[in-house]
Amino acid sequence: MINKQGLWFLTLFSLILVLSVYYITMPNEIFKSEQVPEVKETKEQKKEDTSEVSSQNTSYIETLKVELDSERSEILDTLQEVLNDKSKSSDEKNKAYEQMKEINSIKASESAIVQKIKDEYSLDAYVKQENSKIEVVVEGKEHDVKLANKIMRTVQSQFTDPMIISVKFS
Image 1 (cartoon, rainbow, N blue to C red):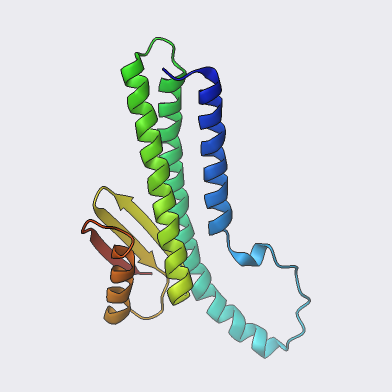
Image 2 (image 1 turned 135 degrees about the horizontal axis):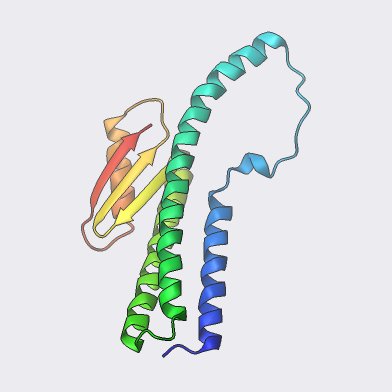
């Protein structure tokens, strides 16, 4: 049975893990200081046109990430309630604890894959893992089959077992 100290440790650890994943996935532009724009209007207009397309893709990927995070946080909240409920048996609490560990390990695996894609291909990505299925959505202007194949191999290199990997471009 999990004691109060262990429960607090688990709660704080999961909070730190979620915050660290959030910090890692934040765009770097937030941390940079604002610079005074000193460009002509024609360059600004061209920049706005291209930024609209990239912001739509980024917002789509960010939307997917937020939806996944909210789904998982709801699941974690219900599992946390099971752990806090004194009327539940130790077997139920152990199962809830194991599910929480599994969700946290999946989150860590997904963030590692996103980081690897970002490092190797300089692309923003969304990764969702469910059992042996992995869905990857990549921000990209071109729908390149060779790039998708390389991304699939990169993702598979993270696992020892064969995985079913799908790559989509936004």
